[in-house]
Image (cartoon, rainbow, N blue to C red):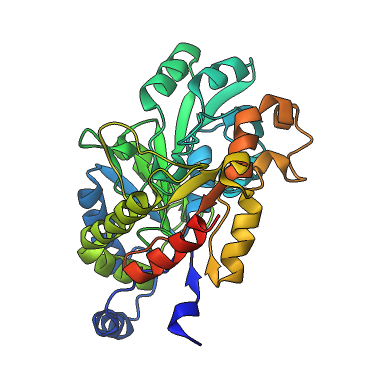
Length: 372
């Protein structure tokens, strides 16, 4: 296959040097300690918390179980207000806890949940808010906290795409009652599969650690009906290696982002997503929005045209969660209740972005976009 037509995927995981990982594997093989709070797990949990600037962090084997456990830890019931503009795991976690999701519309551009729409959706059954830092762009955390404080609601942030993101040098993970992260292979920071819950006190961490290990508080003591969500030693060792290069990789992703913005500047019908003021971003995604009448082609036509040229973008997030059959019967899922979310979902396309995406590949992508 010609290099000019090689596949370009929406993401490509950054991997640690194989020889370094093999050294860690040799230690694991020697110890024969594969899971259950081994030495690599303890080291990774400690170093990761320090890197992120948070006090208490509990590692998980994926982000979905992290969210399921976070809801259990806060004993959330009834109705929870959340966004339809996310990956389905956000709402699935509510369903698995027997909670009714109530969808609120979003703000254009960054596509985060609108605090005013949250307030309008509150009922006597509402117990919590689960906002998402969409694309890693911070929600309006101050306004959401004001709403929660006024109505006595808990906040669990789905920060799955927001690894290392900060506002005014403060970790985005410090907001709300709990935050969850995902370290899936598609994320800016990955442990192949993995995740974490960030909390703000030692007792909460202790309860979360019980919940992720079947509820065991000792060899013969079970204090809660927990689940198995532990991260194993191989993932933890891999994560330790990833921490060594994450800052360098984020800088490389930033260069990709800046080049895209330079080449797409003033393209009619194309709107780029912005980070917001005082945000230190991780450049996890590069979403843009296609206005068909101005651009001359619909988002789906552009998506297919890119695919015809061996460029595999993604329509994050389309369809909306509220438009999937499992949820569209909810009153809050009606299209008339979510006009902005439906519009953004119909216009969005995320271009390839990863640390070693070559400049000539970026130019190849942009040349196709500019053709129309």
